[in-house]
Length: 514
Ligand code: XMP
Image (cartoon, rainbow, N blue to C red):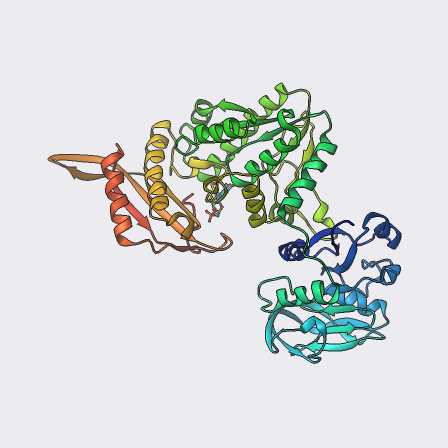
């Protein structure tokens, strides 16, 4: 018997994959598929289907071009849960009515349960907070359904207990819905009788088989940055096809201290991966000479990176696939609406490659969220320190040396940054903050060391705490810790005689200085 399967029919909501992730977190296999699959297709492809979830979506069910499902799906005899658009679609299909509401319901709302006995709301507290995001609302109950919940302005839940078809107007899958996970658990285990028989290991096994099948005897190249996503993708692919994968690691001269070496040591030596290290520091420093404008610097670095990477790719004439560590949030960023979660943002990590380089994309992590990618990495045996690394911007130290970038300044910055990061690790603070780094300012100030006057650079320590990197606050690092770090930097790093701590939040500041 194959493992329990849950299907999520995608109507284009930005939360569709989040539904899949929540189900997987509950140890049940979930897959997002296009909404227009027929009953026969599902019966053929999924032999242990336990339930179907209809996702939300941006459209309106009453429009002639609205997305709809094969009515026969309701005869599959598996429980169905419609979320937001999904509930409205069920309503429309069972002869109820959905209309544009006089005012949209967006954001937090209170859920009033009308039927405390419905299994969907077992152990769910009444009057809890839910997350709403809809402009249409249900104005006439579908046939055979009863109302099981409402909010201040809309019907919030419907059920046909006999057929086990449920609908909720709110998004149970987002964390703002306080009892959402409990409801999903109820749907999966009480209503749909799912087994908890899936874990990350399964994802890895399936992906390895899939990669083997797709790639066959062909060659694959991948730009390895040392960041979490590209590293996990690389290790996963190398487990599948071994030396048919060549990783290209471009040392731009803008990486952190010993970074290229560390990546080589780990992935090449310990994971026996095929990695080509390209020492391109000079090229980047030359290209950046005299440039002080942050946006121009970014463009120059991006362009050079593509040039260097393309030259390497061109040398690998035979490679058919370009692998990338694209993850789900990258996919959302690049999609519009529809069941477009399938739209490919080509060369997301490598920027646009030139026309003459044609690859097929291999993106094994494109359905996963960051925490899932980390779980895969951990399962693959990548050390915690690599998996839990803070984000590092694509242009690297290019945006952390403020003003003109030179090798000399990058070297100074590398030393200071290394001290700060190592101290955070030693003090068990590294995992307490979201991102920490040092920035070198284009300012020299006067200082005194022993009996000598010094005239050296200022560096700024920055450490922030954030959930989504859109807003952030500066970390409240202990004074003693800062004191020790500042002293160490000034004593050990030639060229720096003053250290400041940036406590600006975002907004108004950004996390990086450029
Ligand atoms: P800001 O500075 O905009 O940064 O508050 C938010 C997050 O994005 C990272 N960052 C970048 N990442 N390319 C990247 O891949 C870039 O050009 C870039 N600029 C900023 C930054 O480190 C932080 O995590």
